[in-house]
Length: 258
Image (cartoon, rainbow, N blue to C red; front, side):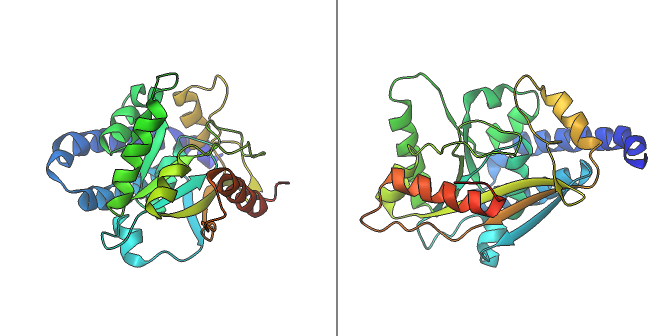
């Protein structure tokens, strides 16, 4: 009952925080370096998740404190994370754990307010159906990985309700192999009171505001972000086998059949 009473207040605070985020990316980000942006993203994302009534729990492979704080290790090649995809909240949950640059569908940039946030935060968009779009994206990914950045791709290419894992696409793995970047599987799971939850699922015809309403009234919603050991990138591995290996690791963590 209490969560229903708190939902309107959470909605007001959530909206105010989004507006603050828009102001930050428009006024401060143009003059800030990527490390400063990542630190702001991490803090802002943590607050956003808390204001929604949810909580992020990180587990798995330990991340170096500097990388966890900055999202960048300028002294080494970056890393490509392959994650399953349930909700628009995935982006902010991952940023709360490890500040990252995301690869997303171009239509996300057209979302009200949140689209401005993710766009100005450095999200890389791929235009479906455009000739040479994949080649152009791969070049961009290579350039950012060479700078030591963390790049996340939702390898299923769409969202699910969290009860299944779709096949992983492998196109964006190629630039990571070319520059020798590590490839990390990231497992994302939403729970309410210890049980798998579809409250945050952003699927089908669900609208952004409907999805937010479901999250605001969820019962102790937790977003679990698990960083799994890097996938082997030996000479015998190609992008297809790596995609399958990453998917298998995530499936095992989430308790799905591979």
